[in-house]
Amino acid sequence: MSPSPAAPGAPAAAFPDGAWFSVVGNVRLGAGGQTRMVLLRHRLFLAAGLDFPILTYNPVPSYEPIRAGLRADGLLLPESQLLNLHEDLRERDLGALPAVEAAPVPEPARTEDDAEDGYVWRRRHLDAAGTETTWEYLRPDGTTYAFTPPDVMAGDTRVLDRDGRVVLAGDGLGALWRWWTRQLAPAGGAVFLVSDSRFVAEELGLLDDPRFVLMHQMHNPHLRGDRRWDSPLEPSYASSLEHVDRFDAINTLTERQRHDLRLRFGDLPQLHVVANPVEAVEPPSPAPARVPGRIVVIARLHPQKQLDRAIDAFALVAPRHPTATLEIYGDGDEEEALRARAAKRDVADRVVFHGHVADAAERLWEADLAWLTSRFEGYGLFILEARMRECPVLAFDVPYGPAEQIESGVDGVLVPPGDAARLAHATLDLLADRERLESMRPRARAGAIAHGHESFLADWAEVARDALARKDSRVRLRGVTATFDGRTARLEVDGDGDLGEVTLRWQAWQQGDDAPADLTTSVERDGATLTISAARAPKGAHERLLLTWRNATWQHDVPPPRRFWRRR
Image (tube, rainbow, N blue to C red; front, side):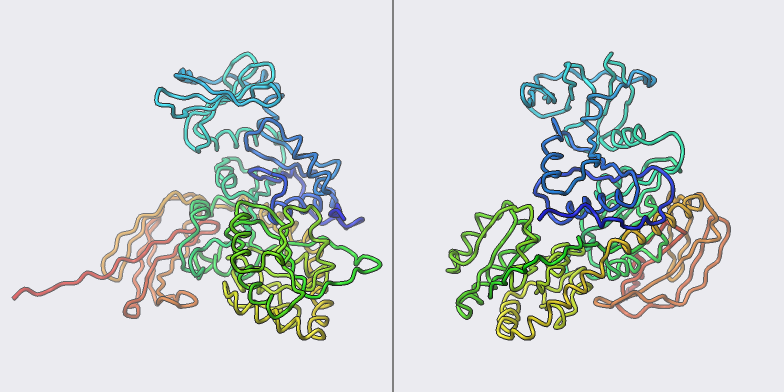
């Protein structure tokens, strides 16, 4: 059974008028839950009456095989537009654009061609040492349409028309991405960019045009380690969150993640929660018989999914449940290592690797239960799909999604993160108590149905309306300098906006605290200068200054007090 396009006759949410684009880095076949979620949202927005092209920016000779595969799997509709920067520039007429001044691209020592079906679509420039310096992109007629850095963000970027005139001279791939996005936007009206790539979103945040409304969807935790509110940021999120003021909306999938973002960055108005929806499917008729002991996992074979823990847990289940099997759907680089692990744990004959299967979710109708063993999750689409098919999920209680999707002991089970033994024990208990397991099935489905299309569309429409309404009142914070004198700090704020709206807090917390505490302070204001004095913090506490100003935020660690020793 292929995914349904959307709920037929779904009511159109009150989306604000404007041009709408889905902005992703790339789309590939056989991708995981995040890509499937992006495509589901695309189909739902189309059903709600929006024209919602998907924009991709990665260099490829052709996206046609990807389009065909996604349509065959039911993930794209016949009317869907999946656009690619490089495909578009090969065909786009750039002759009407004004020429710009640009230094010539240095001649390479040698070149290497990338060809597809006889068409040289990219030429790699190398220096005398064999290092790639530039990528040159060619049209089918052999003319050059672009020069870019070799897959790095910084470096000279050029776009040329068919006569060789330079119509864009920029710095880095981000300049190219912004320029192309502008080319697609209509001349007037609001332009809503719904982003799922933190890397592309960070660059599009530099679009200095009030018409563009940038709304970014977070799909994964932004924290590392034990993922407490003050844990180090994931490197892939650090840069974009340091520029959180560039976003008109940032959506998390769970309230817990928004709570952690607020603790970290302040109560910013652009933080929203929009949980993933799920494809509504009716039970098959006649209903297939469930196979006792069949455990299903649908996941990429990737370290994040920790399928080694699934195999370890199954190795504890198998001796005590003679008919149990572990069915794994998905592909990835870890397959060989996981097969070896299953063999080492003596369960290779009962662990089945199916690879990528387009309709793998339909196998959940025959499963007894499902496992999620990830290191982290945003809001697992697999959990929703399993619950929609009355297949209770046993999951590691990791940030952020499982605890907001599963009511442990009622419609599924949560176990401590990474604990394969506890997962095995909970599985055996549930398989041995058929009445309890069967009672979970309708409850799991009811919980999934609550994630319906109508509420999802309404949430997104509200986010867009709010972002558009706040667009004209956004501030620009260019920088803050702080000097400290004991328990007093003096700040110089450089930015555009009403500085009287700046909120400044002096906070302290101990390791392991659930939240920072505001210290008693006094604040004096003199134009762009703020002076804050604070009461003493508990001994050994971490301290910081946190400034929030509408959409902008800034923070600075308070230096430890100076110590003086009397010489004798």
